[in-house]
Length: 288
Image 1: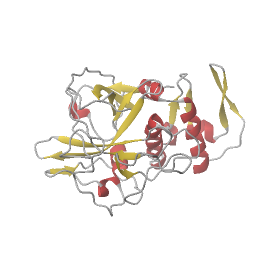
Image 2: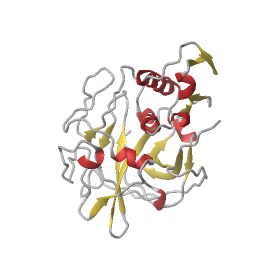
Image 3: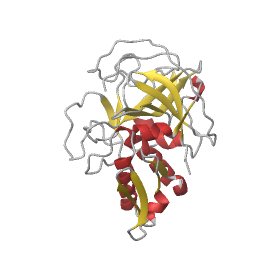
Image 4: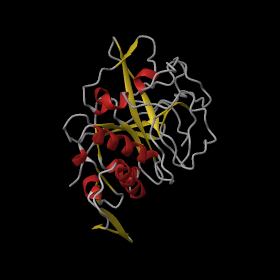
C-alpha cells in the first residue's frame, strides 16, 4: 500500500522544489511551474526579528514580523503539532551525530529538541520523515507510520514493532521476522534509522503530490530537490497579516547528520528568519 502524506508544489526556492504536506485527507495530485527572481544572499545574517529567547516551543520562541500573527492551526493537525515542537535552550549549537558542534553555527536561530542518533543517518529528507513520524506517533496514528525506500519497498512501523526487519540483497528487499515485538520508543528510533538508511529525497519526493495555489502553502509543507544527495526543508510555522499575506519558518537537517534546526533567511533581511514563499518566483541562489 502506498501512503501519500505530502503534496508537492513545483516551486523553486534556491534549488529547492517547494513541496506541501496535505493536512486534509485528500491525495489529489496537482502541479505548477516557476519563474526566476533572484535576491541578494548574505549567509552571516543574524535574525532581524527579535526572538523570545525564553520560549520553549517554535511558536513561543519565534516572534512574527510586525503586523503578522501566528496562524491558529486546527487542533490535532500536523501544523499545530509543529508549532508546539519543543526547542533546545536558546544559543544551543548544531551538533553532528558524534555529539560535536558543526563548523557553521551562523545560519540557524533555534534547535528542535530531537536527538540526532549516533549514526550518520538523520540528514535532510530524514528530518522530514522524523517530524512526520513523530506527529503520527504523538497523535496515536501508528497505523499510518510508513515510508517507502528508494527501491519502492514500503516499510511500516507496525511491522517493525512486531519484529519484521528489512533484508536487503542487492536490489531486492524482503521483510523477515527476526526480532521479538517491541513497542518502545527506543525501538521506534531503531525503525526510523532503518528507514533513513534506505530512504531519501528521491523516495520522499515520490510520496508527495503537487499543489497549485499559494493558499495551499502552510506549516507541514516541504521544499525538496530529489537526487543524490538532493535536499529537503520543512515549513514548521506560518504567520499572517490582516491583508492575508503569509510568511513562513523553515527547518532542516543536513550533512553530516545533525540537529534539526530553524534556518535564517539570508535573502530577506527585514523579516529574517521568516520567508515569503510564492509559486511564481525564486528567492535566491542555492548554497547546498
